[in-house]
Amino acid sequence: MNHDDIAAPHQLDQRLARNRLSRRDTLWLFAAASSLGGLSSGCSTSPVTGKKILVGMSRADERAVDKEHAPHQFSADLGVVQDAAVNNYVADVLQRLRPQAQRQDVSFSARVLNANYVNAYTFPAGTMGVTRGIMLEMQDEAQLAALLGHEMGHVNARHSAQSQGQELITTAALFGLSVALSDSKWSPLIDLGGQIGASALLARYSRSHEREADALGQKYMVAAGYPAQGMTQLHELLLATEKGKPNILETMFSSHPLSQERRDTAARLAETAYAASLSRPNGRERYMDSTAGLRRLQPAVLACQNGETALSRKQLPEAERQFAAALRHTPTDYAANLRMAQCKHAMGKLPEARRYAQTAREIYPQEAQAVKLTASVRLAQNDPAGALADLQQFDRLLPGDAGAVFLKGVANEGLGQRQAAAKYFAQYLKSEADDPAAKYAKKRLADWGMKP
Ligand SMILES: [Zn+2]
Image 1 (cartoon, rainbow, N blue to C red):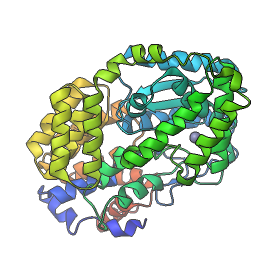
Image 2 (cartoon, rainbow, N blue to C red):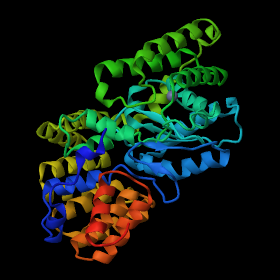
Image 3 (cartoon, rainbow, N blue to C red):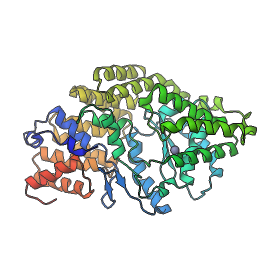
Image 4 (cartoon, rainbow, N blue to C red):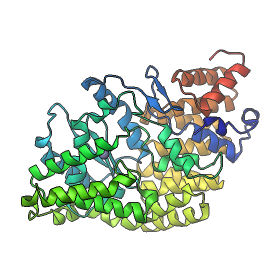
């Protein structure tokens, strides 16, 4: 997409100076700052081209990528579920697969995340995320082993390192998604859409990489004692999701023309090379027992999925209805409270937005996104001092978020603290971002006669 299309709202700076921001202003500011997590000065990343070139990635480089990016991606995916049973279970299945991995220098780990959409991913040094959305789609342990095996395959084959010079870590993908979902040049929902399917910090693998990861994953799971049809069934459930609920499928498995072919390949191997494994138990009971806590949330997760789809289509009343249904089922769900706050914010219902964001903060005090959302609502309520306090808290919870730096500049500008604002804008520009927020920051510095 062309970021020139989403310039700052006209005369934003003047409204900011008068401490009279419009809803559109704050949505723009928040969106402009929402997708840049994980940029640190000194890494050559351009959010516009979406390219982060990791040339000749060493093992230490791989670990650095995990360390730098995984916390931001996990936060965008609404944090790790606070359910020890399910996290321990996934870790346990991963450990069963572990001896099969060729690379014994990697310390694999997997977390279940609160995101509602259907996805799983890995960072190059083996830090994996599995959404609760996909956990609820899977039905047995063999399917989970296939999923984790596939991700392990990417790590083992060092697909990220091989992708060097390509679009390895991309924020453009995130913007691409949200813009594809909007019908105007500028949608006030860009921030919401962007956050729903945020795989922005992850490698995009080629088709041959996906095929190879499938083959490795199936090999690992069979060697670990699982029946090979787990991989076939995993592809089948992803194909069914692709067909029935395409909006919630944002996954490395989503490679449309290839999906059927990959399912067929897995089925063929299951019936030939791995035929001896077919009669093994699939671990359905263990899977169901270990995910019982998650499964109780299923109606809330499904309502959240519908709400996110409606949000991305700018159907705000429908989104509001769905999140309300989710909250009726599970009032203490962090994700549902956060999404409701985003929805109310987009509707201009600021006190309600603030209340839901506050509830989300109380549910998961260690999670950063609700704090950033409160900052955004406070800016909209013309409370830049409160927003600044929230942004500082956000920074403590999730250090290294470039968007928060930008917003701190904005909040200071709102407070009339030009020097501090200039400092943050200059710091933001050091991340070499070339996006709407950067344009805004550059213009402010120029207006004030300062050099970026
Ligand atoms: Zn993959």
